Length: 407
Image (cartoon, rainbow, N blue to C red; front, side, top):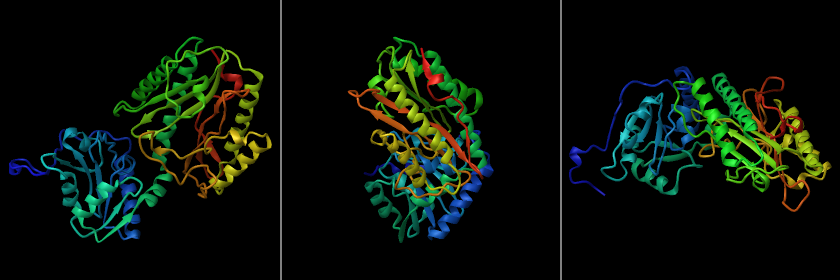
């Protein structure tokens, strides 16, 4: 599709409106990330990396895009680091990034790729993200950039993100503290007859206010709560409903503050008013598995080995069949919308060895069907920073029956 008045309507332009805004990290942090990325690109023989995912664009530039059906990008070469954004965002992508920025127009189709071409040139070795680039956009990349070779950078960039800098760990630590604030607000809001949605809003509002207090120069987006009760606890990611809390209900508290694209979480099992003996037995077993798992997280141990040891613990108690997913995952630039460091998950098929500077959760979950004694989903979740000789648990909200029979 072409435009007859194309001479008056540019394919792209730079709209560097206002002044740069404060970012979550100092310039030196982004410079260090780009330096390591360029070393990885050189090792892979890549001349230009074309990133399309929210997580890698945010990690290397500080800019977290809102796609709304439009493509966004970040191009990194040996000398350039440029975000590519849609005109609808005006100057915000430039202000909220460490990088340069080019705005593409929608006067004709595929100006996005023309903007990227203006940075990469034709015939280069191009790096891309195989876990994110769609088939349609891959075809367009090949048509516009005419790369001599395409190299998938998915794995190497994931490996880079798995190792957190001191600045990242400091931000994640604050996020964990904000998650605790939301947890206490939810605990206070739990009452017999209250709705899941009302309790969830109390936790979310408390976290939003706390983030704004701690980070007055940030943008605020995407913080959320899943508060589940009764049957709705059976899945970890079940949405909130308007169900009213009944006495004796199993409850699942899940707070998720989002700070400048960085995700943290607090997840706890609670009971409303009282807990029956069958449920208490399952709950205590899951708490014990949680405590065991925390003790296993130390440098030199593989994700698979941690998983197998917790499996054995649950199997001895005839509970392994109720496990629903892996026992933990990495933290950093990720959320329920984007990102996943799949190489750092506590599962049988992940052989990554834990190293100092990694950040990982311990979150065993057991789910018993509605027709069984102790029915419901039981889950505890702490965030651990791997240290030189063990781990640092940065989650503060207590777990277990002593503190969490509430309302």
